Length: 113
Image (cartoon, rainbow, N blue to C red; front, side, top):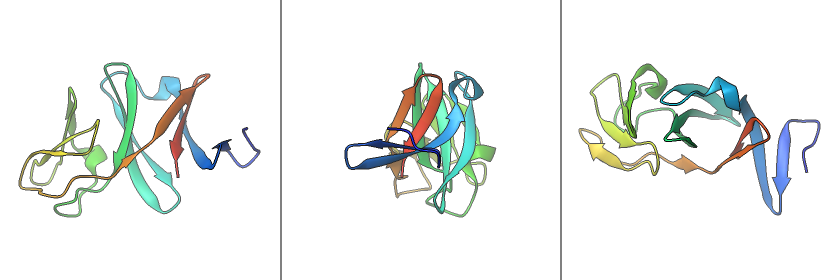
């Protein structure tokens, strides 16, 4: 059920509206805020993913980096994270990014949280 505050309730899970589907094109990413968290939302191979928007190695906004296929590169030290599961693909980072559940429904993108 969608309420007037821009949230979607599915069972015990609350999802927050973050973007329209057409605002996240294939191979592109945007930065959004869910609660107090800064996230990167990106579309890769038709699927939308959401991860922490701040690099786990050194404070840097990942939206300022590059997205190549499923690899999200930090603009500061070029650490690479897999946008699909937050795992570190290439250092210097050694801590993965948190991953957030995403629902794309009727032209809208919702992130759990």
